[in-house]
Image 1 (cartoon, rainbow, N blue to C red):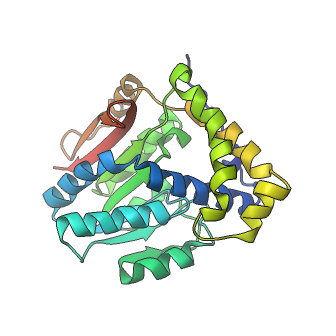
Image 2 (cartoon, helix red, strand yellow; image 1 turned 180 degrees about the vertical axis):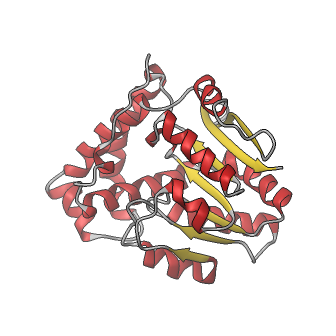
Image 3 (cartoon, helix red, strand yellow; image 1 turned 90 degrees about the vertical axis):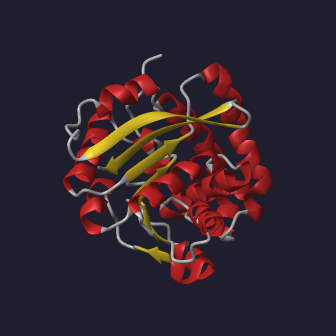
Amino acid sequence: MKRWNCKELHENSRCPEVLRDGMTSFLSFFAIHSKIFHAAHSKIIDMLNQLNENRMVDICAGGGLCSLRMLQKLQNSMQRDDLTLTLTDLYPNKLWTKIQKLGGSSIKIVNESVDARESFARFQGLHLMFAALHHFSPSEIVELLESAVENNQPLACFDYFQRDMKMEILLVFCAPILLLCTSFLVYPFSWKRLFFTYIIPVLPVMLMIDTFISRQRSYLVSELEEIIAQVDAQEKMKIETGVLKFWYGIGKLHYISALPK
């Protein structure tokens, strides 16, 4: 099946902030409790150790809470309280201030819009991206990698979406049901999110549509290999792609990593 190259509803600049923030907060909640990115932690630890780096930058932070939980797990497992994380996004979440209070001095937030391709020139450290690689077209991924190479900044992107609808169709229909069952548990708490979940159920409908679209936009490893082959970085960066398995091999994290030589 050919990859779709289109935008999801919450990516549209006209999407109301309350809906976008409600969506990304739930997705962050889902990522935490499904432990879907735990398979990426060892990869991140290896890169931090090789770089002797303590700064991380989430360039598509979304809800932000999942990123905070990742930071705390890395601090504990590596026994490094000096690790810090900066949250950035093209559409910053207004609820990040509450995330920052939970993280204390380890969390920094950037409240203005930051294009992921421009973050390498602005911020130092290991740049991370979770569940957002499918948002970028092939040419945009090339631009992202070229920016990392130009600014000599490391990058690691992880995405769990798959284009196998036989495996994923259940999640498409389960996602809105899960939102209806857990919206009142999602942190930070928001009456607006509850209103658009239960009174006027716009969020469950948006979630089902965007979940379907996101799977049609996801990449195969072979496609990612073709993309990174277009980046001239052999002398400066080691760029690779691959798969990390989770849920006993049922789920797969596709990743791209770029490490300065």
